[in-house]
Picture 1 (spheres, rainbow, N blue to C red):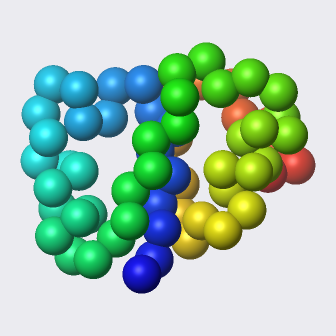
Picture 2: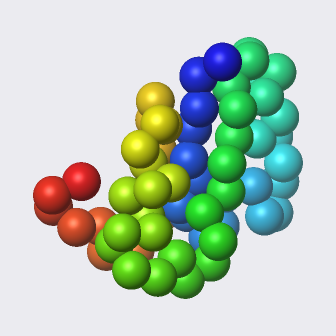
Length: 63
């Protein structure tokens, strides 16, 4: 099953449509904890992800 990491703080908060669409199409959706700390923790979340949904937060270029 393909995996998507959601690192946007607002995605799915006001409306669950996007989350339901992903799950309905067979994606495993993992939501990154708010304020995900060190880059190592973020790398762990992304290590087996097929995609990522980002918001407006800073995202290190090396990813």
